[in-house]
Image (tube, rainbow, N blue to C red; front, top):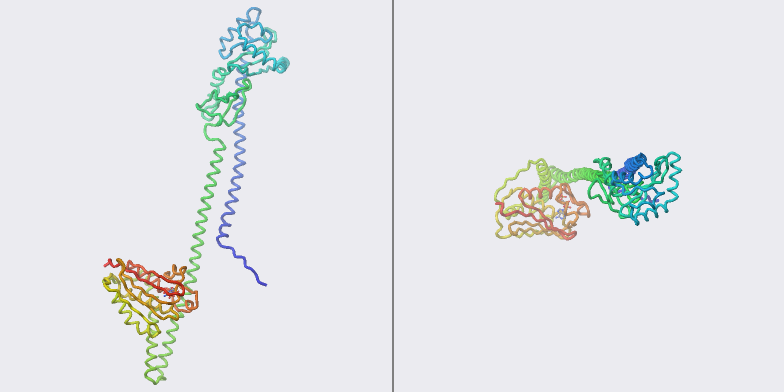
Length: 511
Ligand code: ADP
């Protein structure tokens, strides 16, 4: 039975590790905020209620004080009208003081108002008649009605006038009552913490506020004034509301969590990338050791085998001897090439590689390399075509390092060619750059790998030739380093199975 292996991407795992706890925390945080918000909101609402209650109470107390004053007057026959006039003149918020039993005898009041009052009293007759029984039980209730006329309101109550219980009413100018009596008190209560306002309910107009330009919508808590039913007292905090504060806190907390998550994600990404890089490097290094050992062992065993054969005088024919010497020489060359690459690489790594720059002719260097290698290259069955460009200017360069770079490119062209054993080498001047191109018709490199072949230790292992070709993965990284030291560059144009062209590009004006 075949087992299917569930593969979990490390990213999913990291996301899970990070996102789950922080999301849970966010939810928790939001919930706990809701609870706290409710608690604060509750406390706050109670406080607002208390403020509104105390204002209502104050209005009520004020009317009671009026009633006490009224009761203290001498209400004997004949003095009634004078009393009323005097009392009214002392309390400018009140327009009229009426005894409901003698309503029709009142001459000072105009007909429209009187009609309105009578209408209202008739309408509320039941309620008003209960005032007597309340009074007899020891509680004086004051009723407040809106008269729908010139901002007038009516306060109805029982008063003991000279030992006689009378149903009385005061016609009050509600706006004056508010501005003369309620507003100073409101200013005092509001202080710096609250804004208190009074709104005319039917028109929604703010008739007074402790803060100018208060808009009705900003009022957070509102209660009708007991004695002025068409007016309500509103309250709002002068600073931000609890809701604002809670929302701001929620916003800040979530923003903070998002930032923390982002930082964690970035951190995890760096951590993951470093670990991956370390693992890759460890693998590359171990591959390198095995590649290099393999590469050194082959020439060494060939050299020792042929040297031993020759030393034992087992070979009599001169041409065979000559062939063996050739092999020993070639393998020794290869060995020294490998060792040179490794030494060069280690010098580069430790920053000890130094270059001796002087004006050099790239064609001359190429010719020198070809003189040393032509035999070897042709021996391997390769045809080399060298095209030297005309008028190539001298460049500032290190002869040995440039020779080493060309050798590396030719070595690779040989190593990675299959049936078509042809190499084309050319030099040319291209704008202000000098180019040296090494073209082969070998296995080529796919575009994905092309990005990495200049990295140290990097080797392509796809395809049987690439896999079996010996190498350390250092050659191109050394060439790249050399080219950058010459303020130049190395580029590759290649297509899988269609050969490659490597170009060394030198600046010509650095001389
Ligand atoms: P190596 O020692 O493996 O040749 P290099 O640094 O010289 O190391 O090259 C890196 C890789 O680039 C090689 O492993 C090979 O896959 C690829 N490469 C280099 N030159 C050629 C080429 N001319 N044709 C195809 N592949 C090449």
